[in-house]
Image 1: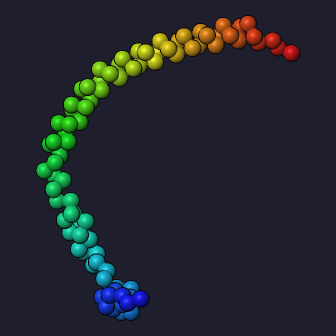
Image 2 (image 1 turned 180 degrees about the vertical axis):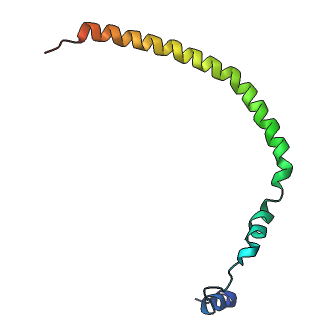
Image 3 (image 1 turned 135 degrees about the horizontal axis):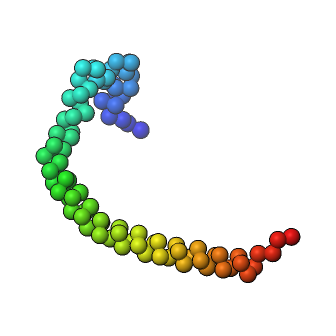
Length: 88
């Protein structure tokens, strides 16, 4: 199987520092691909505000129904154990 010469050269001539990024360039290396992110922050803030305003109404409704259903489940359990629990 024939491999590309660049692959062989990299493997054969590899060392601990071959291809390593100097410490002082790490910040540039990691921030360059994500340089578009600051421009998107206002859009994400508006999207978050919209999502929270819609979710606020729905979460209150879900909490109310959860409280009502939980209350009836608790009452049902109390009635069930009142009639079925027999200590030995």
